[in-house]
Every structure is written in C-alpha cells, then in structure tokens.
Length: 568
Image (cartoon, rainbow, N blue to C red):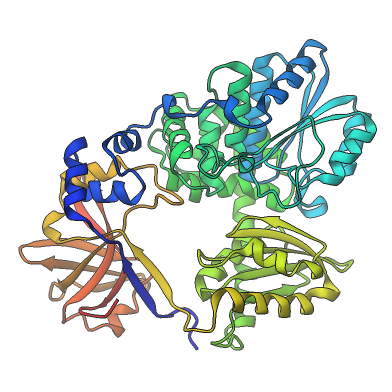
C-alpha cells in the first residue's frame, strides 16, 4: 500500500444558480460569490451583508453568557477590596492570548494586585491543578480566574474551596463531567448550540469577560490571534473578532506582535489569517512546546522595545528547534508505519520513549493528513508515564473515541478533531486494541478515500479581476470558512508549458476555450510523469492575484489534477 496516494473523491457542492444570482444581485457581488455566501450560511441579503461587512454591532451581549453576572460581581468585589487576583492560562496560543487579554482587561477595570501563571507543558501537563491552587494561596491570592482551561478541574476546584480561594472558570472546551464548584463558570458550551458565542475559543471568552467589565471591546488583535490559532470556526462572532482584529493589528501595531512579525518576516499591515496560522502562531507556541510559554505571554504584554525584540528572537530560535525536532519524530513515525500499515487498519497509535511530548501534536496532524486515519502519538517518560496527542479528520470524533477507551487512560480531554491524554506505558497495547475497535466502529470497513470538498464548478470565462476582488471580501479565511476551492473540467495543458520546479512542484499553463492562466501545483511534480498532460484534465484550484515585477496577473494554485471525465 502507498499511504500517500490514496484515492481522492471530489465532492462538488450543489449550486442553485437562480438562488445564488438573486442573493448576489441583492448585495452587488458576482453570482459565484452569492453561491459561496450561501454555502457559508449567509442565505439571506441581511446575512450576506453582515458576512461581507462584519462590525462590532454584530457581537452578542456578554451578559447573555451564563455566569457572567456572578463573575463580574466577584471581580468587582475583588477590586473594591484590593484583593490579589491570579489569571491562570494554558500554554498554547489560545491560552497565552486569553491570559494577556484578561490581564489587560482586569488592569483597565482597576485590579492592581494582579499576577498570571500557566502550567509547564513538559512537567505539569494541561490545566490548573491542586498544587497551583496551593501555591496561589501561599502567595496571598484570594481569587483565581482560569482562561482556556478549568472546565474539567474538579480536584483543583475542591481544593480552592477548602483553602478559601474563590474560583472563576472561563473556558470553551467540552463539558464532560458536569461543572466544577466555582463562583462562576463562563463557557459557551453551557449554552444552546444556536447561541452566537457557542464557537468562541478561550481568548474569545476572555474577550467577552473583559468587555463585560469595561463596557467596551479592547484587544481585538490579541483575541484574533487566539481565535485563528485555535482553529475554531471563522463564522459568526469569531469572524467578526478576526476581521476587526486584523484591522486593529495593522493600524496599532502592538509592540510585541510587531517584533514577532518582523522576526517571522511578515508585515502586520497586510497580515492575513493564514499568516497567523502558519507564521505567528507556531512561533508563539514554540516556547510552550519546548520550555515555558511565559516568554510568549511577556512578549504580547511587553512595552519595552529591546525586551520585545529579544523575546521575539528567542521565539524565532525556539521555533527553528521545534521544527527540527518535529521533523525527526515525523521521519521516525513514518519509518515505523510505512512498511507495516495494513489497508484494513483504521486507527494509528504509535509510541516511543525518546519523543518530545511538546511537539507530538503537530506530528500527529501531519500523520493524519498523510495516512487519512485518526492518529494518536504517545511520548513515554522515563517513569512509565506517557502523554499522547490525538488528531482526526472530519468523519471521526476523537474525544468520543477516547471516552470509549477511557478505562485504559489516566485522563483525557479536547475536541472532536484534536485531543490530549495521559496513559501508563503498561496500558498502551490495550489502548491500541481498544482504539482500533472504536475506529472501526466509527469509520466502517469500506475503502478509505480522501475527500476533496470543492465549493464551485466554474468555467475559465468566469475567472477575472472582478471576481477575485470580490473573493477578498470573504476573508478572513480559516476553519469552516476556507479559501474557496474551484474546479474546472476538460482543461487543456498548453503544449510544452509543463515543467518541474525544484524537483517538487509542477508549473504549467492551462487553457479552456479562449481563456488561459498560468498555474502552479506545489508538491505535485509526480503528475509530470504519471498523468498524460497531452490530454484534457480536470483541475481543483484556487485563483489568486500574483504580482511580479510590478505586473499583476491571475494565476491558479492547483490542489488536485485528474484525467478529464473521471467519475466523482
């Protein structure tokens, strides 16, 4: 079996041309944009206008979240009594940005005795623990506010009550075993799924609390950073936060983010959500993966140019080291899997002692993409304790699968597509068998095929500058609002235009009727040798502007190529 070249099924979205044209006419955009708006749930003129022009007025009232009144009342009491308050976050970008955002919000509200903390990933693991509560109490803290964690911290909540420390939990993760004992619990998952804030990330919940305290929205740039990095759906309130946050980022150029962007060689003035996800986010994550995430938090909060520059350079170096470690683990996992992975196997569980627990989540994502199966990667400590990161595709409920296997686990938590767990080394084989059984139950025994979701079937005659300018209004792109994927059928490759670049990429000129475009297929050089490019092909692609030597043209970024008239 070749695990990389699984069969790919194209799923082309249904296109109601009449409805799409009517919607497009109502908001003044090309018909294809009307179709794309409807796909994203904006099926009425009003919803389309909101989607195309997000505004602060489209945010729901923070008071609509359960527990908000109690949280604000207790924080007000802490301010009036000059109590010492601890903001306790998580070590990923969402937790880091949520901590920074709420720290700023509490300072604006008048909390002066304020500190922040978060666990060390490699030695403490995820979330607030009893020992964190005990340390806070010794430090004189009387109120702890968690951000992006705490919803499953029943032990820490009980310990806080025993020590007389009040606890406010702000989180967005799934509620598995009821609410912990706390003064207030802010979690959009407490609400009906139709609630506009239901998909907020941890930074989004912290943004809501800060807004409730101060009456105005602040730190939209920080909230946008956490929202994109946590891969929550970029629809509804998340779309508003990211769209306005990107504008805020470009206009105000927060010192720490500006230094980080310079180190990553990106420009805040033109920053996209994709650049947050692939450039800024990994650098902020790198500190927590390899050492201590407080470096990233201090960078965001920094007001000293020299300090910010030094921390940005530190994160840049940490990210380089993270990539080196990640690639080594990926290569080892592939070497373990490629010779032995069976076609009928549905789940992947790989464990090793020498692996770095801080980066296995990234590697698990890469392996899931490579093999098209749910993946659990486990790093085993010297004492026999092991930590795992799990990733899955859209057809698999990972946190549900771990729940089905929980008799073999010490603890677990996360989302449908991504989760973490702790396990004893002696239980790994039993867990592997149970996970495979659950994967078979969810995925069945049929042929595994990759599915490519295509937004619109289009002719080359419809691709022009007007359309591409209108496509820009659908940004920011991200989870549940991806960059639209087009397909065109029966396209010809211009003679002698196909060539291989750097032994990896395929560059060619494509034409359909009187219209032709240059195209590039990254990492798809094999088609030069395996696909008959003298015959018509079907292509899946994203059209975009390309500027070279002051000349702007349209080029196609190819996602897949197949011989024409292939069944979908």
